[in-house]
View 1 (cartoon, rainbow, N blue to C red):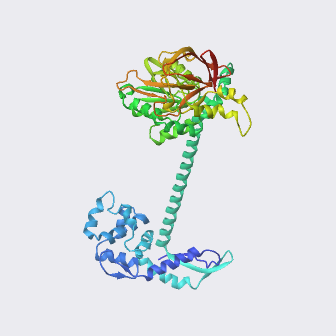
View 2 (cartoon, helix red, strand yellow):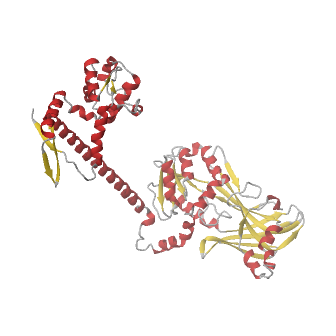
View 3 (spheres, rainbow, N blue to C red):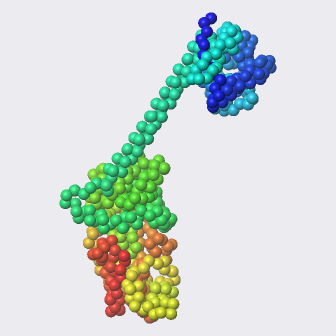
Length: 542
């Protein structure tokens, strides 16, 4: 039989791994191996395979070829036979099955960790022909130890193998090269997919209206955006959204309105103005909306996209980054507009302006904006602690008088949680708004008010608060209030301190006039003018 000579060099370098491999083969040959089907033990795995074929009619090579087993499949088969101890006839019945009974990964757990069969290279089955082995030994005896070759300056013995072994080795090398090529192709595809994802993400961000350069004539629009930068950037802070989400009165009122009125949202197209984290958009989808378009200028919208993806709702919600007045929706009209637009004293920050713009441009005839009704009320309070905290404090600041600060502090309307027992008058509504019909002109107003003092005391301030209603087309109507009598919200109450406490008796009537207008220097801030007992008081909300 023809033999092929191979050079086996005694390398003095770092090829310890190869030497160890030869040692491991010797060790495997020296450990007794138990038959797969009986208690007989043999000196080598090859002897076990021969025994299984002749004594048990189980040709392991045939089974490996039948299911195209790799090394892992072979290990599973050995552990299956060792653990389940099936009859050979039972295994034969699986010959026509689409997959072997040991297909489960549970059979990767060895029954005997020291089993030499588990250390056997299954691909050796293709080259270990009995007749070749003796020939190889004979040729090795003749040539292996008697001839040497010098290669790259290193002398070593010649190693011989039979032609069939040579062909099997070449086949293994070809298979290894093919596997390596496939792995390389898979890696390149994965890298290409990752690059595509990055490009799609970049394209998506660049396609947002906020990144579009202004066209000629858009100078005023660009100026508006720049002026609004502080406002929108403030809503990029996560703490603000955390505070709003944790406001149960606010968030659960919106949720209950949508969940308890699914007839309102079923199969509707919804626009969420100022979506923030997207919580209202997700409520709307859960209530049955066909699709929601969520718009926000602040960077929080990127987190909203991730949140929708995390909750498997991204196919139902389209997020658009940009100022609502400057973007174009992918749809011409919507059925419903939802928004949590309310600010301190209801109108601070002027976000309602954007809602009314959206209503005029995108709302279908017969559509609805929610919440659909709201009002602003004022009442008198008596709270000397608050008064001393903000006013009297300046009479003695570490031993110094700073009374000039009083007028400055008093003129700044503050936001406080007022104790309900501090309110000593009824509340008077100074503005009632129907969001489905009101106009921008209604957001600046003058109103006469009159409140009746319920107990004798010093009126130290007037407070403003608002009520919200989800009413239109609702079978279950939802409302909430920011009054001192209600559960505190993040809007709290707006405090208008008096210069000096006003002594009142129970039953006294306090009459006055309140004017609310936007600050021309900053249209998102408010100027509140109150005339009370012939005193003209102006407060700034900035």
